[in-house]
Amino acid sequence: MQNRKHSVREIARRISRSIYHFGIDLHEDIRRCLPNEHLKTIFDVGANEGQSARKFLEHYPSATIRCFEPNPDCCEILQAVDSRLIIVKLAVGDKIGVKGFDRSQGGSDMFRLTGDMSGEIVTVDTLDHFCETNAVKQIDLLKIDTEGHDLEVLRGGAGLLKDNRINILQAEVSMNVDNKYHTPFSEAHAHMEHFGYRLFAIHEQVNEWPAHEPHMRRANVCYISAAVIARNKGANLRQ
Image (tube, rainbow, N blue to C red):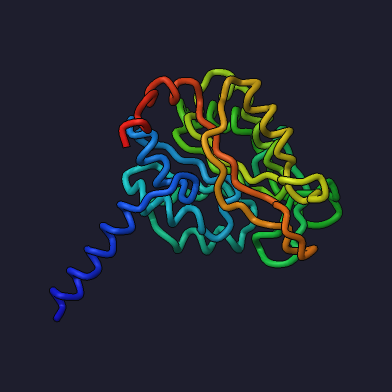
């Protein structure tokens, strides 16, 4: 019976892998369309409780995964996820310093940085400074989910982007002018194209659920560097 169950699971797995649609799953898109990329260094900025980190561990078990998270409660949860994760207890932005941290809205995935310094304070670093001081030469995959501060994170990594030292980058953006909670897609897109990056895929498209309206609210946009494009040119045509 056990062998039969194993066979059924294996058949189901093979079927699911054979039916492939681009733009559904980031990691499957990377595997199929960027086969010459070998992800060794991953930055999870705004790691929260490890939702993305768990997937990184599954798909890239030998990678070095740094989880950046200013929320001390989330850091405790992250530490219990897997000993392979490197927990960096700070926020990431466009300037080195400190900022207020607002935990008043919703669950932990809604907490965000603020200019109000009267309450909880967290330390902020930039990607450029962190990589310089920690001898990080290249980031193979950078995921950003900082509840509206994604553009500040990108600005703090301008040196890395200029030198094409970030291979694949995913950020959460607003897809309409009414959504003020996330970074506008137009601004993030212009910033990335300025440094020679190109849009690779759009994942996790979500409609405007707070207003019960059918148009898009937010999405995760993924960009790749010129070097990644060159290394994988024509690879997706061989599928």
